[in-house]
Length: 193
Image (cartoon, rainbow, N blue to C red; front, top):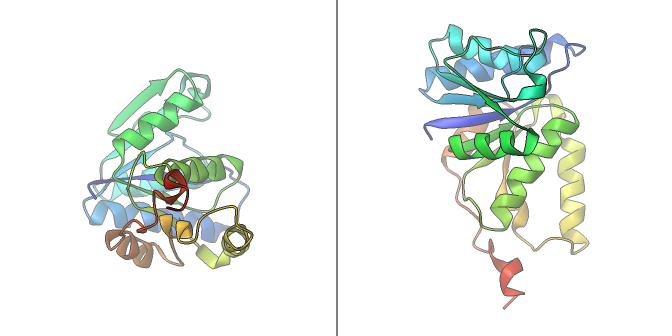
């Protein structure tokens, strides 16, 4: 993977360990020579990832919809900065630029990006690795719910293998490097045949 999109929270009202894990993720990506693709924000975990990656000599590409491009929100001093017309175009551009995707802790926006990325994998639009950074058990409830979805028959067995999860940035990147799409990937299209 030459580039990884990082989805994460932009809130500044979070515990300091979330910012620390975001900084660690940014540094780690830079140290491994992996370009960071992200939403171009300057606040919260988004800003922490970008600044840490740049401080470690990494390349950072920010992609932001024009209505967010304000001095309070944008971090245009990255190595690349793109403006899109809307959120849909932004995510499509981020997905085009990235070879993999990591969701750090975050809120609705992070969940939207994670689920759309996994859905695109499910329907065969990409086969890139997707990871959930389960820092301090942040995603435990979501992982349990995703298993419940499969058990109730709302997704095919094995489709929870469209993403990997790990508690630290190092272990998550290692899991993503080893990722293989599940063999049942296109089962939804074939209607179980």
